Length: 263
Length: 263
Image (cartoon, rainbow over all chains, first blue to last red; front, side, top):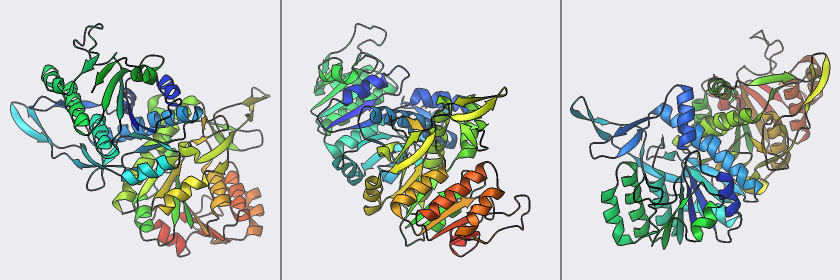
C-alpha cells in the first residue's frame, strides 16, 4: 500500500501525478491539498484566509466558519472533484471523500491557539483540530471493491462539527491505521532543501536519527512537517519520499529515487 | 426505500429535513440541489451563471468550464458537505458523493442546445447532458454497510468528463434502478401550485392521467419537471410527493399528506 499526499500548490502537475498513478500495481490512496485554490476562493468570496502564529512559534490558518466554507469549496469542491475527474479519465475509479463523509477522519477540536495580541497572550478558538482516528472499515470497503479513496479536509470533530486539520497529521493517522510501506509527499520543490533559497541544496536522504536535528533547523510550517515526518516513521512507514510535484512524472520520479528519501 | 430530493433554494430548512430523516425507519438516499449557493459563488468568482432558452422552449443553465467549477464548489463543496455535517450531527452516517465519484451517475453529453441568436438558429455545446445509468453496486455497498449516500451534480459523461445535469432527471434514473416506493421532492412552495402567484392554489393530488394536461399548462423549467414526474411514475414509483421544504418538518409533513401527491 502507498499513501500519496499531493500538495495544494498551483504548480503541482496533477495530470502527471494521475498518469503515473494509473500505472501502479500496488494499492494506493490519495490525500490532497488545495491551499492555493482555497485562498483564491476565500479572497474572491470576501473572507481572505488569515494566519496566526502561536506563542510556541507554529504558524497556522485561522479557521472560522467562513474559512471552513472556503475549505469545503476549495478542497472538497473543486480540487477534489477535478482530481477525481482526472482519475476517471485515466481509468482509476476514484471516490472523493472529505474527512466528514462516513466520519472518515475523526479528530478532536483544538482548545485554542495561544497567540500574542497587544502584548497579551490570548486564546483564539477556531474550527481546527487534530485527527485521531480513521474509519478503516470505509477505506477497506472501497479499496476491496476497486475504488480509490481521494481524501481531503475538512475532518469531523468529537461533536460532529467540520474542522480544519493539517494534511501531514491526517497522513500520519492514516499511516498509523493502514501501515503503508511507502508514503509519497509531492510538493513544489525538488524535495527537502537544506537551504530553501538554494535550488542545488536538495538533501537526497535523511535517516530517522537526523530528523530531530532537521526539526531544530527549520521554522513555521516546516517545523510541523518535520514533526509529522517523525510520526510517520514511528508509525511504521518503511520509507517516506518527498518528491517534486511539478515535473512530468512526479510519482515515477519519486519512486525511482529522486527527491528526498527518509528511511 | 425513499428517495429524498432537496431543492437548492435559500429557504429550504435543511436542519428540519435532516431532523425528520433521522426518525425514518425505511432506507433512504438524498439528492440535493444548490442553485442559490452556486449562483452566489459564480457571481462572486466573476463568472455569473448564464441561462439559455432552446428553440423548443426549455430554459437551462449554460454550463461552460467555469460553470462546472462553480457547481463543484457550490454543490459538491459547500452544500454537500454542510448537509453531510448536519446528517452526522443527527446520527445519520452520510457519505457525500457527486455523480463522478465512483462513476455514480453516468450520462451522455448533450450534442448542443438549439438557440436563436441574431435571428439565426445555432447550436451551443456546453458541459451538460442526460443521466443514463447509476452505479447501483456502489449505492448498495454503502446502504448495506449503514451509510446514507448524499448525491449531487456534476455527473460523468461517456468520456469521463464532469457535466451538469438536471436533478429531476437524476432522480428519475435513480428511481429506474432503485425502485423506491416513495419519492419526496422538497421545494420552496407548498407543493404543485395551480397558479404560481396564488398561495391558495395548492393542488393536493394529481393522477398519472392528469400529468399530461399539467405538462401542457406550464412553461420553462416547470415543463421539464412535469416530464421528469411522468418518467418517475413510469419507472414504478408508487407515489411522488412534492412538499414544502421551508416548514419545520418538511419530510414528516410530506409523508403525512401535505403538499401534492402524485399516485
